[in-house]
Length: 477
Image 1 (cartoon, helix red, strand yellow):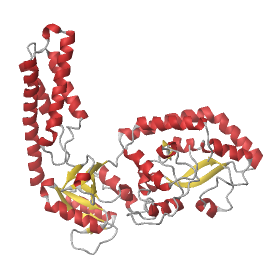
Image 2 (tube, rainbow, N blue to C red):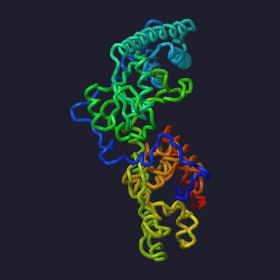
Image 3 (spheres, rainbow, N blue to C red):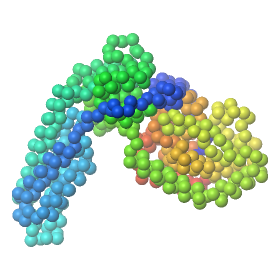
Image 4 (spheres, rainbow, N blue to C red):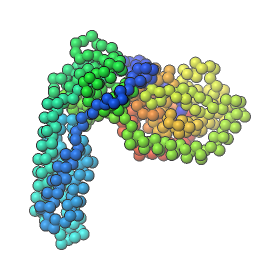
């Protein structure tokens, strides 16, 4: 658990990084109200995985049946399952936007060889009489690799031909000047299969190019009239999260395009028209469901277990400090939506303005000994389990902040607004790395975004365990 008394890095000056002071708080009736009309949904064109799986299956069956002396059905089935599983693990059934056989040839052949060698070793260990000869092993690997390569090459060639003959309409989302530049580059390279038809921006940049769409209604109209299949995002996705989520639900494929970095700095990402790109997922995933189930199970269990402790803290706080046991404060959560955060009251602000804009209360001299105890042990944060249980927060995630500071930090620190891509949490990666108390906001942004980019359920469990260990040796807030 974490404190609310962090201060910005000294000497930080506001800088323009494309973040608006209120960018994470969607205005009413703006993008937050964007909905695709019922009954008119586009269909995103995705690389077909079924033909690739069929090709690998045929290659495994043909080579296994033709080259093994016994041709035992169990061996052939194991060969098929093993190759398909390894290929799926290597994302060979999610090829690049413009697939090329030579790019995946080493990976494909290596997995075929691993499968054959593994099965040969198992057969030699458990059925020595049916052990495969070295010649059979080499021929099997070569035959299966050749058949797979021939089949996948044909599938990829048909895919590239389709992209050139039938490019998909796309919208480019971001600052008008940058978006027009990216759109022009895609139009010069039609072989990538993406044909920009419009730019979504806050205001026109005064340069020639594609039509600039500035309202949700214009975006909807362009989506329907052009049959838009893809959306190229050249600004932080959190800037337009509600609209992007609606476009994803409408069937559009979202791509985050790095308009400034050279393609050789793409860190394993795909390439479209020479730009480093990666797919964006704005819809609810199974992983999100798993995270929510963990939140409900753990928060519900903890609330039952600590309810006597919560009651005791409330009674002692009421007797020692008077009425007003629960402190309620507006915080900013996922996608900039405000919610009411609950805590045990450990201080009394002078007025609402001070409560909204005063940064640190950790050294408040007027706190009673019991309030100091609550803050030092983080027991004042336990009521936030109710926020987790009801869905306002998560157990693990970036710490929520007040609207005043969200607007301020979104201008000053690059990446601060992007923290709101995920539901805020009681604890997080930044907190278990000591970023609580009077520490750097810039460092918190970096750790929070790294947590979101590399999220996994196991990482959440590890952070919770490290947080529980830290509570045994409280250091104060």
